Figure (tube, rainbow, N blue to C red):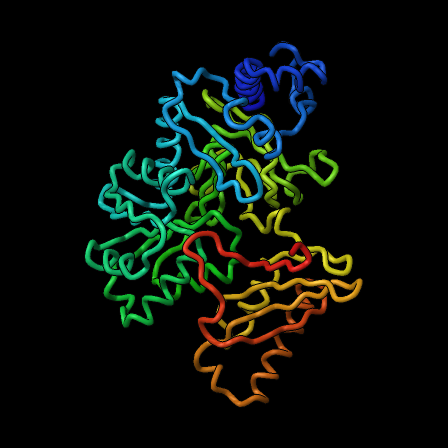
Length: 417
């Protein structure tokens, strides 16, 4: 009861800031909310319309800022590959709050002032690099702001500077491990002990692969620019992804209605205490479940399961919903295959066809044709078991699928070309 009262007060404060923005004034007025006094319970708050990425683009660039530009000290933005970028702003207080949130998350997994953190997320308008950077500095750890790419240099500095913590996307971590092996660098030559990986969905099998090849403990970090950036949630040593208290989560079904606690749906987030760019009920398009309670690590509050998939990533093939993460799970359960893959979708006549390209490892590549055919059949069967759809599997030679230095590209949809 005390928690709900405190939450309602924080939500009212956010609504008060939001009501400074003409666009939100109109949206809230349509559901009978003209002042914070109209919100007496959580059910009143749930009347507020959802905010989507399209709302941000409609108000490009600064239409959803709640503070005058004189108080804005930083701007970040999405890449804008599918239209105008989504632009977010920060006041000085927002920057300090963000750094504190990330620092607390890093501290929870055992990162200290003695650590050397190599931040291989992209810097610039993308929030990943700078979010981790400021959090590490707030904590007092040594930061190597190398950004993404230039893999040979990454490995050189990792060894020469004694990197103990690696922060990047999980797909790039796997690429670094692969490049390390090609360069003849052994795990024992490095001091890596912790990995902070996020910005894309990844499976438990991918975690095990990264941990085995890099010799570290891998943790999931969750965040998105529209809410704050990295640090919205962070995994603890007990394997639970804890949502920071400055954000209020909901999980909704396909109709936009709340699901029961522990049921899967789309994560919707509201920022608390943000000044420049407060957001109400933002649709993340990430699929997960949430729980409230106390963890044995000491954290009390909301926790979420690792993101299983994104609504955006879902493919509908012959009426069946399929996610890249399901294919990844199947691939990692079959030996002789590298966790590098591409889903190729095309329409043949009036029928959609899905072909999965998967790299075999160097040893398997030189096996007899019959052995490769058996491997191909085993993988096709495993994908059908997990995803519930029959697909074609194409085994390709090692290193033939392009690597990514940021978010991995998993789908080539020729239907849209």
